[in-house]
Image (cartoon, rainbow, N blue to C red; front, side, top):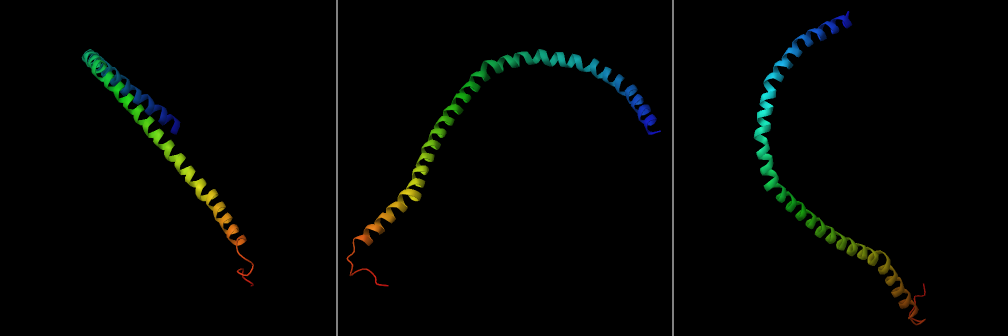
Amino acid sequence: MSLIKFLLFGLLAMFVLLPAAGILMLVGLPVFVVLAVVGVPVLGLLMLVGLPLVAVFVVCMVALGLVFGTLGLVVGLGLAALKIAFFIALPVFVISWLVSRAAGRKPAERATF
């Protein structure tokens, strides 16, 4: 029963929608043609004025990207150098200082406990 109802309502919807689509096509096609005729000079003006502006914008964005990319590279290398200094060189220097200080003491100055 539900399938028959579905098919009946689908057929009724087609009887309503197909003529509406035809009317919309008859009205909409001339409107579309008029808009296309009006849009061609606007498109030409956009190509004449807008395309160089877009090209300049793209070149400026590329230049900014290169500048900030290079800046990021320099900052990243600086941070990597600081990490190496803090986590590798500094502990080695502290240990070598402690060893040299402990080795440089006289036996009487050393703690007995």
